[in-house]
Length: 284
Image (cartoon, rainbow, N blue to C red; front, side, top):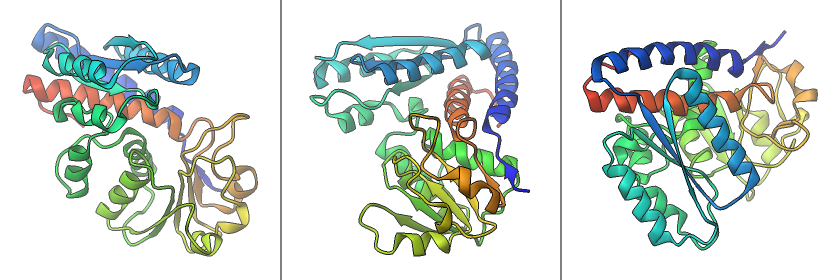
């Protein structure tokens, strides 16, 4: 029987530990850690994600500052708000909800976030530091995946990992995190030739392509680890798990696998940022 990589239960365990750290932080500093979430526009999915992150903060006793800006917001206006949050000593982490309206230079907005408050791991500097094995807050979803693999003691070193997707906040950092752990990594995308053949070679498959059930069960070899980072209407991911799960050695369910780990990692990294600023030792 394959191992179910239960992100939901691990996220709950993590929240209990973070709640203890929040209480310790309050005792030492006299204040509460705070995450600022910026929502530009009125996309309902984005609003839901921001609400979920605020709820997670509340569960651990952390403050959540919800910054809402109109859909007609200009890049300069958003950059100004980010600067205010960078300069605010009571704000420990900043999250800009993706995607933003088309008129905004999203990359410029991401880059405006202070490296010390980049708890969602979206800046080029953070990516570069992480890639070089230096201290940085990793992109929340791939960092969450790595935490989940470690939680279940999934071997990474020496394994062939195939990442299907190359987005700057998921596919690319995922590949670098696996490479830093001594996996042999292949990154695939929409232009990749013989994609099924490449996936068939993988010991670890990460579905991060953003297309429902794009990765077919027959593409996955017996005993591989299937990590599905997708979520689509109908409760399906990027991998055809209903047919692939039983041939794997371990897999992340959808929902309840990678999704909870993303928010858990965001909150954990906000806690770490607060502790770093306050000079409190990181308890992992």
